[in-house]
Image 1 (cartoon, helix red, strand yellow):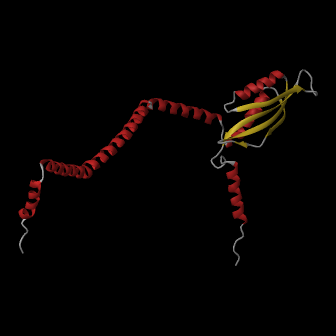
Image 2 (image 1 turned 90 degrees about the vertical axis):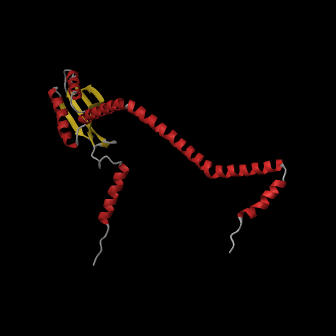
Image 3 (image 1 turned 60 degrees about the vertical axis):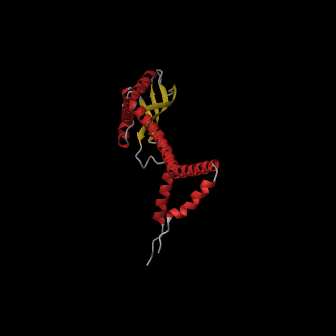
Length: 224
């Protein structure tokens, strides 16, 4: 089998080109050149441009992150100082709020402060706890008998206790059963305690959990 002669197949093309005018040949050559450049640009240049744009966007993002990191590094010592101060304040608050096991001792300290101030206790009754976010308030209804100076001394002693105790709803009136400017003073001493994790749950969730336990407890078992 004869191999095709490439020169013979191309020769007619050159003959046709020779018959064309100079302007026509220039136009054809320009068209071929533009087509070649278009194909090169589409398959080679355009993908590279897309990659360059993508790398440019990544560079901008990395530059932003770098700026944030630099600013954070500059403020690191300040942030550490603020964190240390917050931890120190938390320790102070934790010392001021007793745990559950310390409440009886604290109540005894309040009562002892009144006795040391020369007051007579008519009523000393802890009330129901009022749960907050991470602590509980414990109100104590107090009624004491004594003169104004002794009452003021009692309040001062309570204020000096290592735990937080707030005296609220103070009401003073003369004691009709006694003389010498004796007063009957009623007030509420409110102290606080830390709640355990389970006790600190919102009331709705706590009730829901209790309801589930009750349902499980009352669910009839299988009988043989």
